[in-house]
Image (cartoon, rainbow, N blue to C red; front, side, top):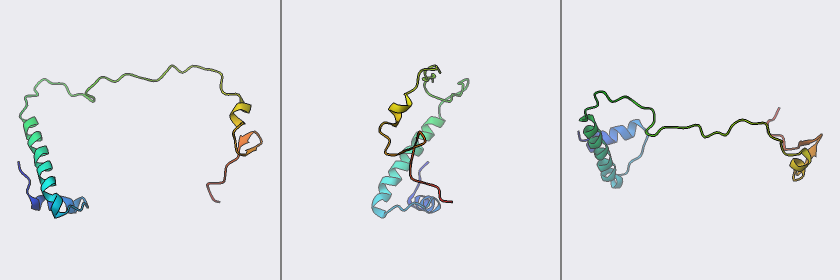
Length: 96
């Protein structure tokens, strides 16, 4: 299947893309390459091939959830520009 410049212009219009005439040849070649590859994939016999969600198996990389001592409050607050009642004081972000 080949795609011509008129079809590319229609697709660009529908997708709100601006493709200049200088780039039209590059876009046309890239789209035709993709379509050729898809056509090649469609010819494969996939009978009995089970669908998969990922190409490689995924493993949980999270560490175990363990209770550990946290940073002491004084150490956490030592670089705070401002502190109020034991908390970081920051400029108001949400206006009332």
